[in-house]
Length: 347
Image 1 (cartoon, rainbow, N blue to C red):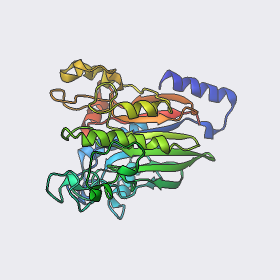
Image 2 (tube, helix red, strand yellow):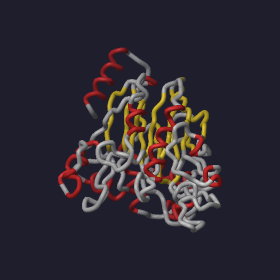
Image 3 (cartoon, rainbow, N blue to C red):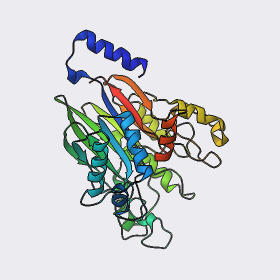
Image 4 (cartoon, rainbow, N blue to C red):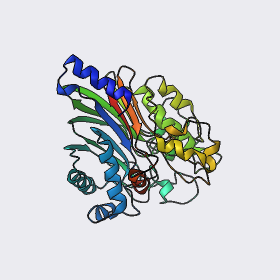
């Protein structure tokens, strides 16, 4: 536990506050629970799988109260999510409340969205994906989820001040902004509502001089500028952008940071991993990194996963599950290239 967490706990005890005043832990994690075809994740969840076991151990290590999962395959019956909740429950982590909806990832558009003269490719779907639901999102919660506003059907060209590249009228009339989803989920915690603003943005790479992905990454985060609730909120997810070391456009992240607290969660593992390959040339603090990608080619390790509370909330502690050594260091590497990020709030 960090010193801020301990100080908060001492204050709570000294004031004689009720149990509902315990810290509220909110986390985001990309557990790499996406497979190459529909139904394969459900298959793997039903059998022994070292990678899934490792991802569950990472979640158990953090034990968040509210957890946003990115890169989790979606199916219409919710069977994969139900199977994951069962596996978590067997590991001692019970999430009685959950939400998932069809993502834009893998959703057919019927158009040549990338303009390469071909139809039906993964790049021609509303968000990159080889099948409907590949790489979706889900929210798991110990507290009731009372309502969810799903903004995933908003068109890119309707975003004020958008950076959408020039497109045909047919594409402009159909291309959605969200590569995966934008959700505003209201979670009721101890009689108060908290809004979880959930997203997973496209990486600002893998395109050409038109910078389509870079522009979309910028605009996906810019969307929240006009949709921040007049109530306590936390913005969380895979923003796929590191202000210090990413390719892409930093303006949108800089603007959103003026509305939120950046707890700057750190890990010893990220710090230790800084000394090799491309990472040694990075400008950012490596202890803030949340993704461990190959060191011999771009982009190296980056901070791409965020939990950002509104300014009127009080942060007690934060962290990234990435130990520098020991058994859990192997577990987090087996689970995913991403690391779980958590923030404790004084609720």
